[in-house]
Amino acid sequence: MSTEVQVGSNLPQHTKDLPHHEKDFDRQVGVGREAALGGGSFTTFWTWRANGVFQAVRFNHSAINANSRVFVSISEFGSDARQDRFIGSARMAVYNVAPFNGGFFAWVEISWANPLPVRFDVLVDP
Image (cartoon, rainbow, N blue to C red):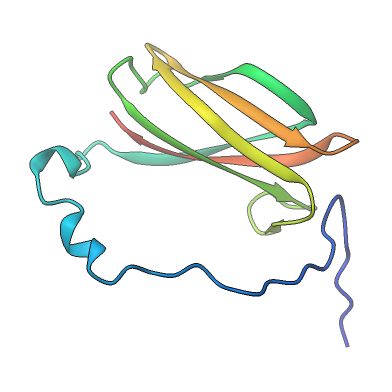
């Protein structure tokens, strides 16, 4: 019998309803050439330990330029950022993302009393 280790804000939660998938929406996305990802698209991630509101966190990456499309998500992790991610009780968000030549800035909020280990997953279409 294994026992789950609860760290940070990894507390039990109750979900009443799951997100609903709009079945016909998939056919509408990606219709035009603008919606397609380029051949140079890539994913990467950053880790950080923080709490609070940060209006302009700087993420440096030489393959990103001012015209890149950058998509960012945030999750909390326990002991290993590669395998131990979860959604706990802490509210976390990435609001605004602004690419520049050499990286991007993001407005980040981590609503918890103490610093938490977080992972930013990033999809870049240069």
